[in-house]
Image (cartoon, rainbow, N blue to C red):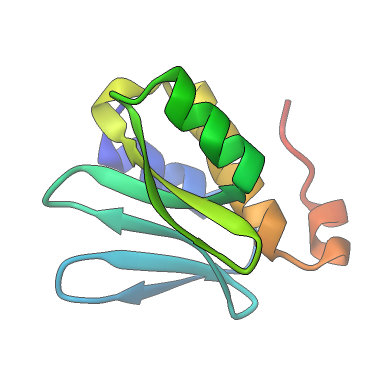
Length: 112
C-alpha cells in the first residue's frame, strides 16, 4: 500500500478538509477529525469504534496498534505496508462515516 493510494482514498470522500502540520496531515469532515497521515513512518491514524479498534489490534498487531481512545471512539495506527488497499479503504470510509453528518453519509455511500 502506497501513500499515493491513501491520498486518493481521502480525495474520494466528500467535504474533507486537510490540515498540514510539520510532521503529519490531519483529515476532518465538517470540522470533525477522522484521520491522520505521518509520511515519515508511512502510517495513518483512523477513528474507529472501540470494539473495532480492539478487534483490529488483536487480529493483526503487526499492522494495527492503539493510538488513543476519546469520546467513545478508539483510534488505530495502521502500517501502510501491511494492509491491502480494499481493507484500508473500508477503514478510511468508516472513520469518515463516524465523523460525517448523517445527510452527507447518505449522499456518499460506500462504493461497493
